[in-house]
Length: 375
Image (cartoon, rainbow, N blue to C red; front, side, top):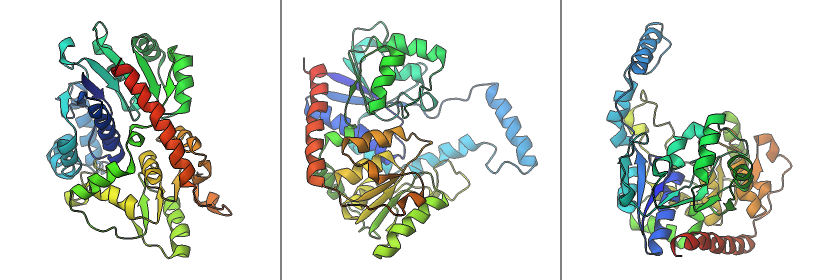
């Protein structure tokens, strides 16, 4: 089959890229071809809304309250090929993609035999064009529709009433739906009126050896310390946690991901270049310990059988962490502030037990995909 995958945009997010790589790889191994549909990031601005925005920026600039260039979008587009050179280099080597306009995809019924939505937070309204991720453009087509490990990102229902009505109708057209979080099963049942299966994130469908091969394919540098720190939303309390764990063990903390956000156009471009994805993976292989507030960094801590602590990232969706960790009875690895670490005994993780559970859940998740595309 020729399968289109719909997921979050592939830019500089290591976990987002790797979950797409993993799903594509699994489907390829089943004998299918895949293309990941990517959002057109550089559409012409909509007038007059854009002119109103420019006027506001100009006024704020004159008042000294706007720190970015007036034409921020123009600067971002100019910088884009530079700060994505490593991550999109990985994508170009490993993932076949097609750029589409979500509002008007220009895709014909004959272009694909099937569509897979997932994974990542593809069903979180604030992150997506929900009509597109629920495949509204395929409404009358004779194609297979599947959601694999689709995530709402939270255990709360965030859809408007109109979006709920639209997505409820579209969800009934899916051949099969699976979700990444246990809470997603209930959200699908209670708000969309459909049955959903709980499956593993795509990254867990591959094994550690698959990621080891990626690391060894390119030249990378030895990790710069013993405690890998992957913090997406930085604040002093998270780095206090780093000190609390690093100093007693005489570990040197190191980070691989870029230290500033890609949209910080005032920061020199060389500081916004995201390091190679393979270097990030190497960090997990070589680390003695991992501290993160990232869902996928938590996943890779588990894949590489490393001790870790997760600082719950409420803004990005804490339900994701609870669902993942509870699968392996690792809820004690989740904290909400550095103070939670005081008096907490971090027992060694029984990875023999965890790996057996992964193998079992991986088999079940692969059966879900095979039942759709091999029947």
